[in-house]
Length: 278
Image (cartoon, rainbow, N blue to C red; front, side, top):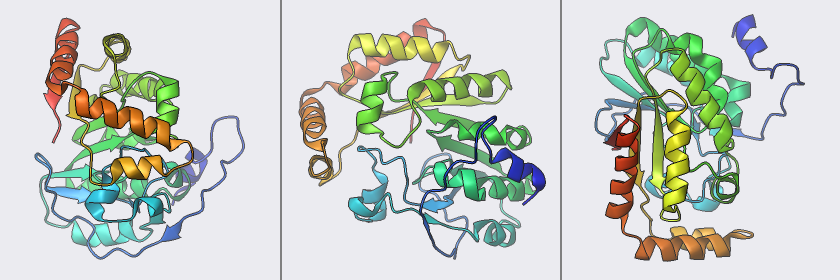
């Protein structure tokens, strides 16, 4: 870890942020094959996620109990294992396919940053996805990488974000991060995923306008997909019953095709491209 890396761990003008409590897990395979279209490999520096998004599909896909998902384990040896296993590989790496590579633990451990430094000499492309403006810390590395950088923005409502994404940065910080990524000339996009059935046409207008003002030229769209037990898990949380009931009711009655068509039309009117995710 360089002195530059240590310096970049600090917020400008503020004290060092408090490190979250996390565990550790050892890495056997650094770059497992990805099943997602357009991605050859998956790279996930952490198991679990502090963002604690109520709609997160990852615990159900990885078969980890939802109640344990915020007990984050860091793959601290991942950069070293990656350095050995990346040799001779070609293609695109999906960074953060089942966990956020820029959650709070990354501010202190720099596992994602160190992995990017290992990837650069080998020329593989990276498709990074996060909900955190911490990705701005690594702009210097993304300038040297092929690929794309995405930030998930499900709405511009702070209240909705606090309800559904309690541990993630609020939408304003994500929008500002997109603007800075676009200003740097990076291939930046917004993932509207999931497309929440709670959104009204006014919500969509506000979302599309805010994204268009960042300077990005395209967005990715993924509809909300419930998993068995998801609504029950939401309802079991403190204060979660009301949001679970609202989301389940909207999910059962919403015309997703109409919502998607409306969103695509709004993007088209702004001269922005909208593609399907995964």
